[in-house]
Image (cartoon, rainbow, N blue to C red; front, side, top):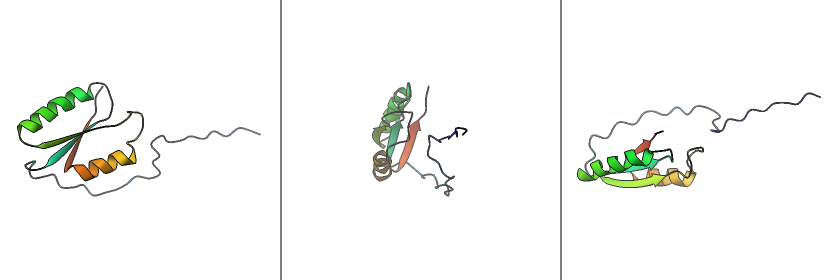
Length: 94
C-alpha cells in the first residue's frame, strides 16, 4: 500500500473571507489606535516612533504584541484589539 501525503495549511484557511472594506476614519481626534507588534525583528522600533508621533497629536495609543510571528493571533488578542481601539496599525518588519 502506498503512503498518502497530507498537506496542511498552517493558516487554517478553509476559504477566503470576503468582507466589505470599512470606510477610513475621517480623523483620529478623540480616537484610540492599537499598535500591534507581530514579534518580528525591529517592528517595535517602528511602533515606538509611531506611538510617539500619535501621542504628540493627542491620539490615544494602546500597545499589543503577538506571542510569536509564526502563528495567527490568539482569539483573545483579536478580541482585545477589536474592543479596545478605533483603528489598528500592525508592524510588519524584518
